[in-house]
Amino acid sequence: MAKPTSLMRIALASVDGAPADIEANTKDMLEKMRRAEADGARLLVFPKFSILGATAGDLARSTVRFPLYRAVKQLAEASGECMVAFSFLFGYSEHFYPAVALAHRGRLRSLLLPEGTRDPENDTPFRARSTHFLELVRLAHPFRLERERPITLPGSQVKLAATLDTSPENARRLCSRGAALIAHMAADPACALWHPSRLVQRRSAEWDCALLYANAGGCESTTDAAWGGELAAACRGKLLALTPAFQQDAYVTLAFNPSAKAVGDKIPPLPGRDSKMPYAPLKGPLRRQWCEEALTIPAQALAQRMRRIGVKHVVVGLSGGLDSALALLTGARALTLLGLPRENLLAWSLPCFGTSSRTRQNALRLMDALGLPRREIDLTDSVTRHLKDIGHDGRHDAAYENAQARERTQVLMDLSNMHGGLMLGPGDLSELALGFTTYGGDHMSMYAVNSGLLKTAIRLMLGHVADTTDNAALRRVIRGILRTPISPELLPGGQTAQQTEQLLGSYLINDHILWLFLSGWRMQELAKRLHRIHGKTYTRLELLHMLERFFRRFFAAQFKRSCMPDGPRVLEIDLSPRGGFAMPSDASAQAWLDEIRALIHKEEQQP
Image (tube, rainbow, N blue to C red):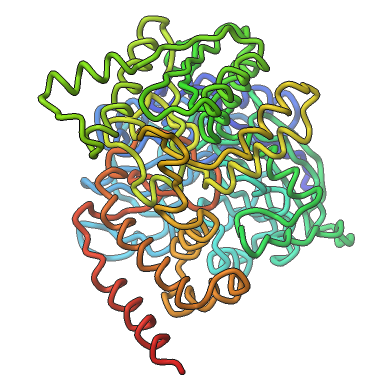
């Protein structure tokens, strides 16, 4: 047996594969285990549910259940002197529990279940060293089924707690039971200006322990998020290791002494937020860093989606406005990440009844600036013929407007099929919240790269690109787009006939309302906050009427969000029905509107 020592080598590893590809994920994990063993590591930590993928969802309850258990057996039997910590969804008596597995010297040493897990057969807590003959026992060496607790690492005197839950309550419980080292197997989606380094460093200082962090990455789905796969370690406030986000084949080893009492590094303060745009830092270096990360996340998510489905082209319809400009830039970045040529970026201008000369020229100049050939399809004749076919009389009604948006979507999707590409959706989070999308038109795409971004965030990001690019032509056209009034341009006259913020209200206010609402603010406090921040521009009564308009539209538009396409979350808020924001399409807004009307009535009674 190795001589006990407090100095140890630790390894952290992400997994590259695909959700539900147990064979590929297990193969990658076995390779990392061999690597850690060769490096002399005492402990190797994998992210949450790496065998199947943290984003596999209910697939864990289906056919893959027993292949998953066989992979657990394979990993356990391959373990050597290096203890391996991994996790999976453990099924017992038709129930499933998130379990942490610890493997050492060819066997599964322990299977740790969350505190409070109960035996479904008799509604009693699972007992330590349970002798139940569970399904997994038939596929792996005998092991102990226990509640989550610290265990002593072999060959050392250090107590380790491997966990999926690092809530303050659980961390305090584990530390009180003697844990000097907490290994967090995480599944945290990428988010602009969210840094594992700060999280790990701060928590290790607060809990007076060493903290390891392994985040889900390359084997996850990009349905609603991008996954960074970051690996980090800190000891009592001192950051010891950190890998960058989106690094393929991420792996790191470090040697440290968890019992050391050295003073840690200075923990960087949390960034100050812009009061009017609370998702973004104040102007300065952190704002620029935030913009870069917000540009990177959707590009990485798109690149991963393209790898998975085997497409090498992207198709974008350019309107000459903010959203489609950012979608085009995201497509260009994704192609760079994949090592694909710029000519694989296929962009079209699709003018129709409401397209203005200004936006059309914006679109064409944007193609020029990126070195793309000018492609344009005038939809006027095809939409006119369609309206005639359905017996439309030419009135400027919803059918007249939406036929243009739906024809654009059909053309772009058909072009994508023709060129073997992926059609990118430019629709943003603000439009989704307000229902300002044409159902089956711009509402739909093959990958919605902007669906995690507010309109005001897109303005900041494009401004950052214009300020930092070396491409003078791109700088000029983006600044021209930023000066162009926002309009759907579905009526003759373009921006003079329709300006979006005259219809919906200021995007700055609407985005702030959405942020506060999804952050859990009560209506009365939300209204006070809006007036405190925007009171110099709008009266309290004007802001209350904007609140009322927002909630009317927000509730009425849920049916569009219930079937929104895949797209990555970028900010700390999200409206995806698959986990970002759960809401029935038929929910009533009455309670919210009643509260707002009461505030309006109170304000109107003021002398």
